[in-house]
Amino acid sequence: MTDFGDNFSSSLNTENKGDRDLQEFLFVEKQKAQFNAQIHEFNDFCWDKCVDKAGSKLDSKTETCLTNCVDRFIDVSLLITNRFAQLLQKSGNM
Amino acid sequence: MDSLPAGLSSTQKDELMDQVKQQIAVANAQELLTKMTEKCFKKCITKPGTSLDSSEQKCIAMCMDRYMDSWNLVSRTYSERIQKERHRMP
Image (cartoon, rainbow over all chains, first blue to last red):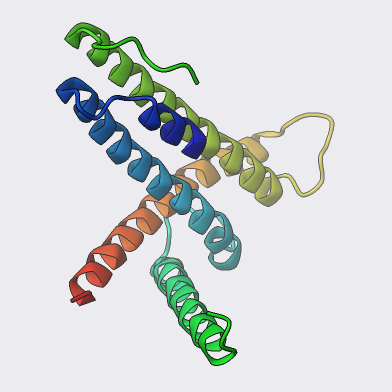
């Protein structure tokens, strides 16, 4: 999907108003697709962590677990990104 | 990829956009279907027998509904978080 968008976009002529519209359209669609892909991934592992038995509805404990799972994953991702950047800075490689 | 012929007509452009949207929607549905099948098979079919019995079928139906509930909840949580992070940025 990423390659498709990039190749396609770069083959468009930005001078052309119609092409700019298309480019903008593709940019938005690509972001939506990335957002969806991320949700599929979150739901994949949060389901494994939080959902024990599939009952007639998600109980509140499961719902809390799912929202916490997403939020904590993002926390971890941010924490690791920041710490990794600090490590790189300290080692003077960047 | 070959470059596009200069100047698509607006009808061609609309068709192209519709096609792209449709392909993305199909891909999204396929992904959901694949994941749901995998997760619900794991949850409901602990010992594969000679056929799907009615309790297994009921479990699968329930599991599908819950998987979609979960998907929607995760989606809501993620977009709220993105919104929050955007606010935090200077």
